[in-house]
Image (cartoon, rainbow, N blue to C red; front, side):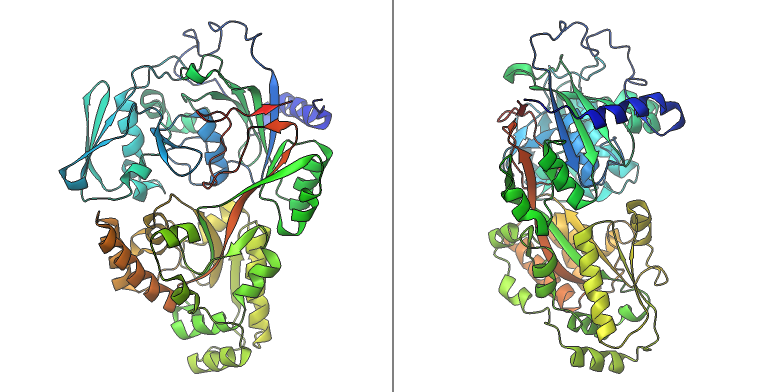
Length: 542
């Protein structure tokens, strides 16, 4: 029997009644059409023959944006991915299947030309057809607008609409991961370019769900689009999906236990057994394509000295910290690459694992003394609002105090403040930070995005001076030769790990607690993939 969720319904009524004075956004106000072509469902019947099911999904944090061109956080991508269809999309694993594309791309000119065929029957929710121009804009916009996602597509030199159903992308160099770069949600060019700010709050997608209302950093409510163009597999069982952030992990588990939510993400380590022992719920988990780490400000302050970074490494046992605060929700990781990827590429994990030290406070003190670090120095470690990453930061802070430093601050910042701070390179703001990254299943998504000097101040806040290693990452990015790329990644990563630009920490399992009333939902290796209605599943709630 379906739970009532009366408290949540009351909250929605309050929000609706006070929307004029809040940052609440009601969708459907700037969509470039009045819905008369079916975008409002009016031509699709009254929907009485469709299931009227509701799903409540508890995220770890709320969405920041709704425009896929600028989205750079997992919660936003989880929601937007239900509103938009991708050029290509992930299947139940990390294989790619066509979405708005009608087939896989044709690759020519030694890997520098990709020809993408586009479906001729896809429609946006305002009634506009999805065109080759929309696909081209989707790929070009991140770099043209200098978004945080620019490096994902900045290898595109030129693009051309060949005809109404064909787009050609010519690359400046062979980029082996370009097909994965085409896993992008297709935006409506005309509507978006007419008012980009409005598009970020009231997006027009072509996916099976429409955005009904949302509040940044808070909730989002989706409704089934009953006139969804891709209905060859029927329509979603879910009429409504509500995403709500519950940052406090104990509360998240309690809400699952009481039946107030149907699915929770990221089961906290200390509560795994609680969820396992819940007769009304199950756990679905998959090793993620992710990486969580401690990073140093290598440009300013004492941590610009590699001796100091090694001393910090001696202050803590990362093995013990991960065992204490992450397992069984995650596993120790010794490189920037998830283990499944590292094993597929035959990277030297044993060698890399030997680089990080176990705790040895005498060695730490000796190195701090050799480097001439003042014992009165004010250490500043910043962490995002996440308990596991905070605990890694606290473990480092405790180690510094055990080594004799009294002035150690571990500061938990809200996401906006943290994201602004960690890319400044200012030692007054941070000496170290803990962060994580969820990428595509190619080494470039981790090595280049987090360690290349070319993305300093964007996704890399280390400001290191390992020029040769950075150049190797660029060379690997611009090569389509597997063996060449592999060796470049090995050489560059070894140098950067030995220099302790990062100290790798762990990778999370993408874990979900699922109420027994929910069927056909499972975890996915890509953390932004919340697959509710695809060619292989259709989530339902009893």
